Image (cartoon, rainbow, N blue to C red; front, side):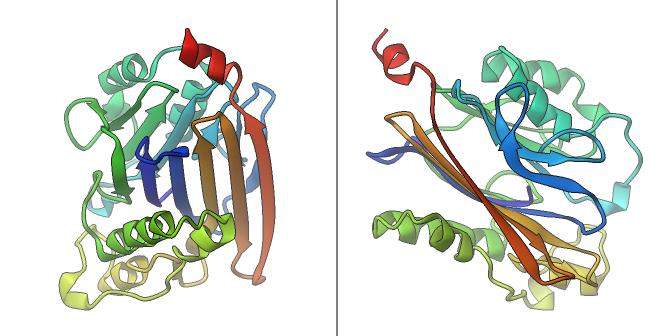
Length: 261
């Protein structure tokens, strides 16, 4: 994923409200949102075998974004998609899992990783020190560290805040509110190692760079305190100008019993 706005444990009905865009090279093959053999729901990277965002009916959630640093780009043997998959398929609590990943974080290309269970949401980046537990609130994450106020990130948070304030939780509306193609003025663009022309195109929420790289997925995840989960993904083929929608609904296992115990 490359642009996330999310509201964690800060709403009377929803534990997590998340809107996310994934940017990738168009030629990289992937499969749409589905239930994996191990039980969790998420898309599938058909090249490296991992995923970018997913949730398990046992209440485990994870998502990752790339940290864009093209000035220091090099090859790494480990895939960042495994960081999401391994948490969703594992049994470690979020904090312990990230503490283990922190020990080997230099073995991965730049990342921002979110992992959660029913009790807490945690964040780790290999571009800063320490595991951070996120308090209830509204957050944004893109290709820099958490809450870096790039304009497209600010707009994404504003879109989510508007939907929350108007009690509008229709997935397509949430998703489309994070699809702006507006780019930023050259003077405020970050310097992440891309060319000035690329930096400008990358500043949009919905990206297309030279018809070879851009936004390939959008996902909305709605997780209620009652345990009900609604996930919707729109998978884009920007070259063919088509899309495919997939929606799944499930309930977190034993949610009410775990809350009462």
